[in-house]
Image (cartoon, rainbow over all chains, first blue to last red; front, side, top):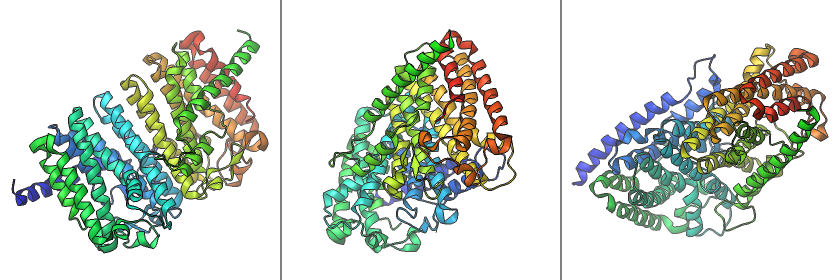
Length: 304
Length: 304
């Protein structure tokens, strides 16, 4: 497998996967222009603004690739993929609120509370969380896989996962006793839990066995951490126009970051280390893990 | 069946059910005093403050009674019952936020954002929504019932249900074109959808057949509306100390209410009418519907 043919495969897969995910998300969302509908148009528009406003679709892509990596049709994981993006987007809407990170720009557009108002943004986030579970519970087959995917999503999203991590992140702001293990403990919950769940849900929806699930779980942990370290590096060195959000905001808020703790070079080394471990974890999947392997290396080099 | 023996039965059932639900909620919540836990203690404390701070536990009670009414052990519906209370409590936390109804008092105690802060309250609500799905997905048996209960809960909570109703309620504030059907359309979503889901989830967790589920569904619609009309009446005529929240706030906010639309007597008549329809719906359940029948009549006379 030459590196250039993998790059081409990966780029084509990503483009096609994003197109399919975007189309499915559009179908799952309530219409914004139906005044007789049960969903008030303003709420539907706010959900659409944030969910369909671009984004890398990393979590859906991980879910689809996990299904492929266990030899199944990625379409089996499409409901889970959409649910993961809804869950992620709701967390961005709430994190951007004035009471939290108070951000004006997200994915190159005004944040939800800036485009609408605070109450609408809170409710759009709440609605997207509920819709995520609706989609998984209804459209994942069989029912046992649906219940298991709901459980994975809920655990990753809840007080011991994403929300707990966001709370820990807020509480750490301005504290001067940062350490690398403490920062990793925040990221394991704040972003890591949902990235790991992306792999697990994709695998479960595709009927993975325990050995495959374990391999994808370990890959998910490594890739999740590598992704976050690169995120921190981009906040220091990235291009605001490409990222579609403010840079330098983390250090401005007194947030703990990898570059502040390990330096830029040390952070790059650590990202490489955990990405290598992720790639190693794919071994039991054989050739079917090729796309996930390429993605892990690609994430190290991303500029957005 | 004499009226007084039913009253005694009902009071004893309610007391016992509340005790069991409160104990289960306490077990499901993360501990507030474990600094090494994945859930930050401040987040756990905020969730505990709001979820364990009293409350009628109406939704759990409806779920447990629905299980009983189809001839099953109410314990089968206990996870669903707890999830419904978590979902309801998260909605109260978010509705009380400054950007929404801006309330200081709830269940006789400071609202979550007053006892903690806005960011913590937003996250405590978010965490309770996720935990609700976690509990249903993991502890409802068999898996098919778990997936179905997750779906019922998600639909009731989402943009076409509770969140859509809250948005519609906010948008209606101050508008002068209120009508009884438009108000009912708001309440059907804002409070009705979750009350109806309480009956449905309890029945599904207990293995109800379609005829039983239909009966409980219709009962849920009627009781949900009756409950809301009485709520509006209490906001006009109730005792703040008994209610544990501010009275007169709805008209103060320019909200649409039944007494404003139908008058106090007209509202009482309408509540009686829909409660009678709820009781009628129980006929196919025979004697097993006795407790739900008593509850419907009891709700008409509540003072908190």
